[in-house]
Image (spheres, rainbow, N blue to C red):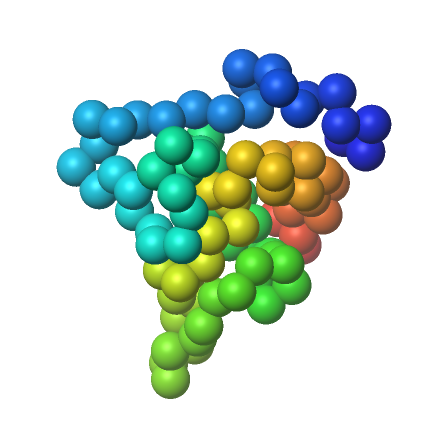
Length: 91
C-alpha cells in the first residue's frame, strides 16, 4: 500500500487492552500499541522479515524484542510484504 491511504483508517489499527499480555512488547507507548498483527505475518520470512528478531542456538526465531508489527506507522510495511509471504509459503 505505497499510496498510504490506510493512514488514519480504523482498519489499520486495533488494540485489545483486555488481553492478559497487553502490551506484549516493550518499546511502544501503550496508546500507540497496535495489536492488529498479534501473530506477526512476517514470521515466515525468517531473517528477511525486516524486524529485529534473534535466533536461539537451535535456530528458533525469537521475536520478543521486535516491535515492528506493533507500531502504527508500520502497517503499510507489513501489508506490503504479503506478496513475499505468499511466495515464501508456496515454496
